[in-house]
Length: 121
Length: 107
Image (cartoon, rainbow over all chains, first blue to last red; front, side, top):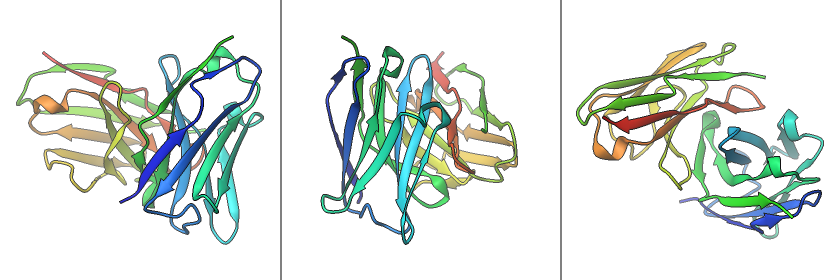
């Protein structure tokens, strides 16, 4: 059974970088049949897909247009985890952030419990 | 980008009722449509994927249908634990997108 555990700060100052890590157990970040996604949720924006990384003989990443200039999703095979970095944050980036495994047909399951990240000085 | 529109945005129903939630995509997504249930303070849980395949462990009172641009989620007989917010999600291509949610409340 795949389990995800998320870590990272709950408070980030404006203009700084939001960094979260999602540790995987029960699967491999290098799996050839899974992808590893970041999603966020806020009252104003609802559920918003941010991006994903996956391995298919080499590493790929896809990002949402809304954050493409500020986002990086990386994998760390030695720790079996993946990460989110969002640069130059503003209060608009305040949200609950989730990591999730993408399986066949693009289904997202499981999702981590989620981390509220507040952008405030 | 593909836009997903859910209706209704909120719905009041009673235990035992049959309810249907619809989701429309701005372009064809074939059958790459997933449904999730979310309780307050919790992460979304997968209910149905590929438009009509019930996720393991999900009660059979949940069903999904549709293809192309129009999809439905049906709960055949509402149970108390079904009162939650439901979201559709297209996984046809990236950027993935979600509907705005349907808040199912007790009447």
